[in-house]
Length: 232
Image (cartoon, rainbow, N blue to C red):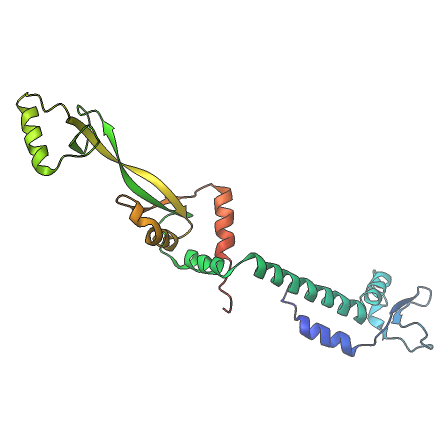
């Protein structure tokens, strides 16, 4: 079906005969016409000989009478009111920031990832067994303060020579792990977060994960992607 030109349909309805339309059915004479109440004989709005001989002539005539210009205009008025209401709701439900998010979702580099989920991580040190995998050895005192480079070298020499370090020092193996901080729909959202809070994080970075088969996330992301910046 081709696209309906609602404005052209409204203009045609305005120019047609106004008022109620009634189907005039005379099966005996094969007359199937449409007229307005009070018409004199043969002053029908529609008297189409094409109805004659049709298998569904009576129903066709009744349908045309029912779908008269006033009905058309009433339906168009209702549609227009609904369209305005939908626009009002969308404007209230979607602030400008949502339009910017939608634009970023549509245009950003998704890092070859399906339904990308941009996440901020930071590096966090945890204590591990020195006999296994670790990133570095640190010496900490009884107050939890880490030794400086000079102190660490001296303490490590004592350890390598099987000599006991001063009582206040303890040798600890540590390893960096990735700790999740927050998640955004867009990479720009992560960058904005880091600009505001990155100073509180240790070695932060952005990593892209996938929302694959996460119907809830995908549904909201697709909705945001459909929101345009106002004025476009």
